[in-house]
Length: 257
Image (tube, rainbow, N blue to C red; front, top):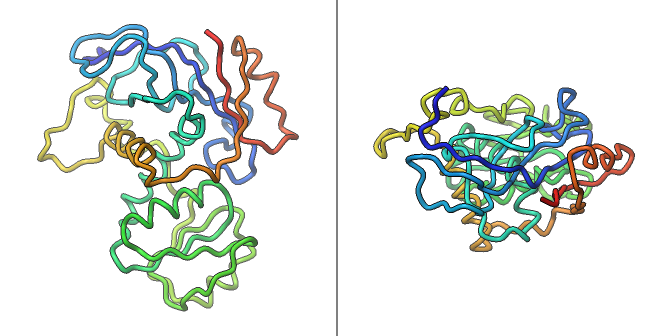
């Protein structure tokens, strides 16, 4: 496939999580690092506002250090030292995909069941819609109304099934039913670099990335809840050596190039 706005990138950052309820690292990617940022090495035609050496964020599951993709699928990162932002980018894309599909409205009541870092991220993003967010987990026990507009259920929230049956819920979703590979990623024209017209209302992967990064830079979204460790490695083999499945830590690997 010929890419119109090609960028060539050397992968520099990869993420890893072994938390049992982590939807990104399911059985297919259980012991696999996922690349989330790298250094721009070469720019093709129709690429604007980028320069060689920029740090670009993206979601890249293939295990290769060099990649060629459309600039449509990347975002410029101004602060490479913000390790929490680099780590959360793939999850943020998924969270914003969920928001678009459930479409919470001003004044609606949204219930989040579970306790993990993704639930915490979702709560902050849903709050921006004007909806009222309620959490139910082992750590959070707040008064929850009997009538809920939307319920989002994390896979580990099984102990709350009796509570759910007692509530009146208009729309109920399990988080695993949402796929991070939204239909926009299957659009061959978009992957080639063809931009959607401004008036054509459609999901835009790049705009989602830019919007989220802007929220972080303006301190609208706070990532202090993320407890990650950054590990410097020299190559891909060293990443695999440091993926200790016994240690329940969120890890960001930085490859020294």
